[in-house]
Image (cartoon, rainbow, N blue to C red; front, side):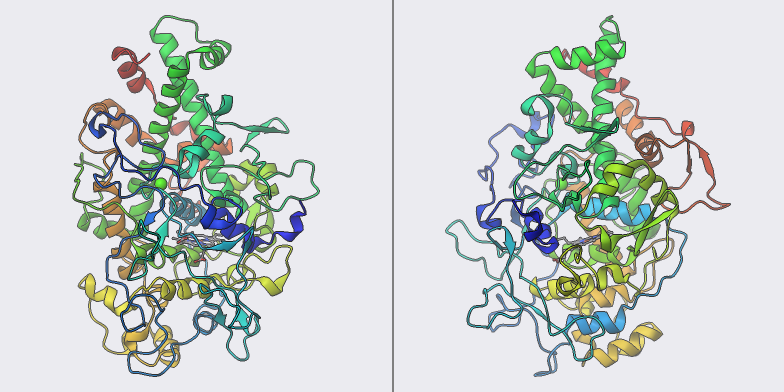
Length: 621
Ligand code: HEM
Ligand SMILES: [Ca+2]
């Protein structure tokens, strides 16, 4: 295979589509038949998210839902993206013009750490990705193709005159349209989610059974996840699929990493999140095995533990795997909902949407746990403004633009990237300034600058592709103060927006939301904040397996188990995985006099005894 024929955009969309040559059309759709299991008696989640919601909402490869009806331009409002102003025949501004004028690269320092950006992306890769059609092994080309031969899903972004960076046209393909059982497009057009919407660590274990089995030892039957030893250090397993899932280099240790979400190789700091939870799974398996041996009165040396894990029956191996997966899932939910989210949406919205972690919650089968389109194609892309141009490894500056889909740095320097991530923050600030590493150089690695993309333009075009209603409709939905004039935007934004758009009702959700000031003690503005809190509330109350739900045997967690999960923090995980000796108290912020470094021993690793007791006493083992 000639790897250099595969370009980063090819890789991005191929990885999204599960690396199946031929793209979505050849995707392993998995078993799409309804759940037939007795849900109440399930102790573990299904890998593909079925058997959770009564209608299997939230399972893999189902259409997204909507908080507001789709806004398409054609007569029936079914399919064509919004292209004109509400006042008539004036074209909406090109997304690239908006990005160029509104989102320049000015780096404003903030007290946030890069971990805030990185965890956000990792979380988004657990809950949603909208597949884009591809031709075999490659993305569909739309630019410089005459309209007669252009693929019907082409929706290239026009480049405005005088653009300092691009010429004429930027590639863009519309997201796959959802189809009904007879293969006809659903109207109005709806997009798909290729992942389980639940915050269930599908980034680590996969969103279907096939991926999950590839990641496990002993040909999919072992309790441990596969690892690769590089210079004596454990790394993610080698993805040997062909064509390769990343860009390999001449380095002898260069390989493509395999994990639960195909985008694992997209950039090195992202890879470190995958490896952290991946290794934590194996740590928990060993802790469980040790605890079980001890409770049964057997020897518990590392060698005995290792032997036990390898020699117990297949049934016990499966239980060890699933139990560790269940605990990792809960730990991830704890960090996402209890630690990260309050920082993003601020304490007021946490209260308003009942997202606090201090009391037991209750599952509600009437809540729809699917990902909403305005969240995925709009609000939750807020994180793109937190991206900086570079990250630090051992004090050296590495640029994202040089490393898209080249995982070498994460394979060589996982621990140093974690240490650097906790204390770098250049540009990690919620504002209208975007790093040019993503607005001018996205995915240009190896194919050269000509094929680069602008992520901010793509976000705006994606919003139109998905029929996301304009910004002001979202404020209305959440009863937020109506804006009547461009002047109602912040000073700088009002001037730029009024030059770009004809009417205030034309302003797309993405630039509108980015222009808002942060909410009190949060990162995002109030409109994005409401959409995000609304979505996470659905992901909590609509998830039968959510970790704080009232204990229902055998699904939930008893009081001791819940206490152990609530005791766990991102500090403990990062200390473990980065092999750190000290870490700041608040990992979302940089080190400062108010946020000092403290010894890692302050943060306990997860105590699995509450599970050992339950499992042994209920004769699981
Ligand atoms: C260096 C970091 C990142 C890079 C290079 C990156 C890149 C991308 C790209 C290329 C897309 C696909 C755009 C499209 O075709 O529509 C995307 C989508 C998305 N990104 Fe990011 N991203 C990064 C960080 C983040 C962060 C920090 C967040 C949130 C906190 C985030 C949230 C999302 C969401 C929600 C989507 C939509 C997924 C989908 O619908 O398929 N990303 N990102
Ligand atoms: Ca998931």
